Image 1 (tube, one colour):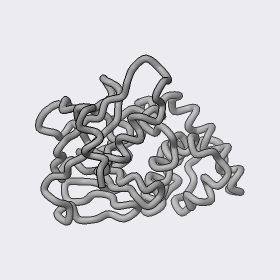
Image 2: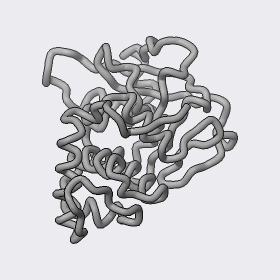
Image 3: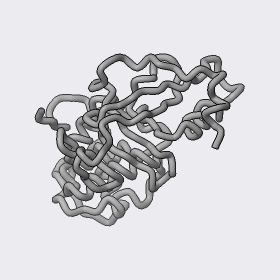
Image 4: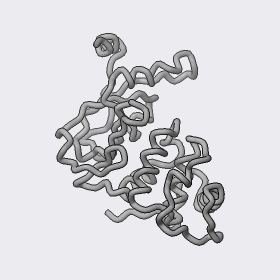
Length: 218
């Protein structure tokens, strides 16, 4: 399926005009000359473009740079890995369909997934991967998962005592066709990015709290 971030769609929470403004601002900070509303020629490095912004601003900058045509394929993959893994809540910065579009633009397809910043053959993955996700009810089908139960447990318990909606730990057996990316180098979270729309059934299986202690044993 052809994917594009151009056209009339609103990209992210603040829309096309805001993205154009962000690219203009970031380009100036990176020392890049850019006339208003004109695309930057591909060849700008993600490192230069993102060097002076906060980690939670990176997703918006990445979408902006893609809309502007600023990044080569390789720099797009670098930006995607960096923006996804360093932002505290990447799923809140843009809707799920926008992220799926970005992964497709980075080269993820039926035959390839992203491992850190490199495309790898999907056949190198096991047929299914057992994964966990800490989430409140209603957010269990989002994209971010981990193969590490201790890491899911940490996410589920780090805000104990805050808020009224407890986090549950969901589990799935994800087929390799649903794997968009694997990220571990940046944060050591054994993260899998999963297109949950490709699962054979809705995400509903919960790890019972009474089983958590056993799963945490080495």
